[in-house]
Image (tube, rainbow, N blue to C red):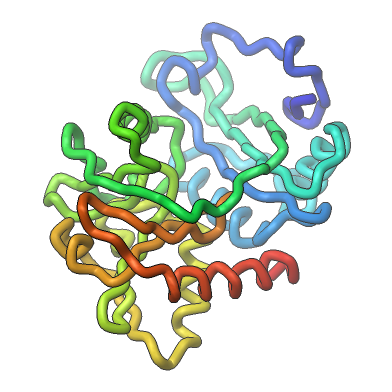
Length: 277
């Protein structure tokens, strides 16, 4: 079942027009959230990021779009699925049909899709750099719009080269993120992650991991620019997103990393997810 503007419809019966602006212009944003034990994980943070993104893209926020309303719509959609321990939710927001580049209206439609979340942390996880196209730095790149062509091409590259993921670069050839999440690099007790000004997604799990790291007095945290060469010299690398949590990276080119800090952060994050904070 799919939730379309608050109405549950079987996936085979949902109909979107050829004038759909997400289809025609990528005029859409989305949130990927996890539901664990019938709780929407870190929902408040996801909600406020969504509201900020809609305002930035000049979408008209419906008066009913409260924190509680959207949470209940997510849980209503989950309740219509086969029972599972964890679910992957995609909340899509797109401007209503009509117009060319200039829309006829800034009012929106929404859909909520639910899939069972079955991801398991991998013991072996390999990365390399994707160099064909850049993910340009700037504020717009921090929003989860439907324009994910660079991520798609990098994912194809990873699949063709037997990699688990790829690192995306910006026009300054600095590290931005990986195809499906944020990236952290550890060297000599200093943990670096690309600053938002580098063009990375303003990840909710990124935020939670930074909060965990700031409480660790043994580590220094830096949100900064990162060169691909720094990854080659790193002690550890790990990636984060809302579904996997923390995935330690074991291999980059010919380099093998340790995973001690990444595993500790993953354990701390799981506690927060279960607590619902």
